[in-house]
Amino acid sequence: MAIIVEDTRTGARGIVLGAGHGMYQSVKPPTLFNDGREQGSDERLAVCTADGTVAWLEMAFAKVVMVDGARPNDILIDDA
Image (tube, rainbow, N blue to C red):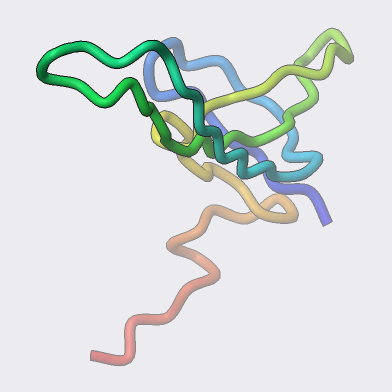
């Protein structure tokens, strides 16, 4: 099964290889209005580009354009 995604910023396409979700937390010296803690998460897709390079694409900028050669709206049925 091949899932093709497009980077909504650049229009570049890639094949989805997998997904990653990273969480981080760091502590810096505190200041008067800040306790110095910073935390967050990062969600990305590992994609194969046209030249075979593996790259990471932020999920917020990924749009699925094909699944096994069919467009998503041809596969999904709206039951509403």
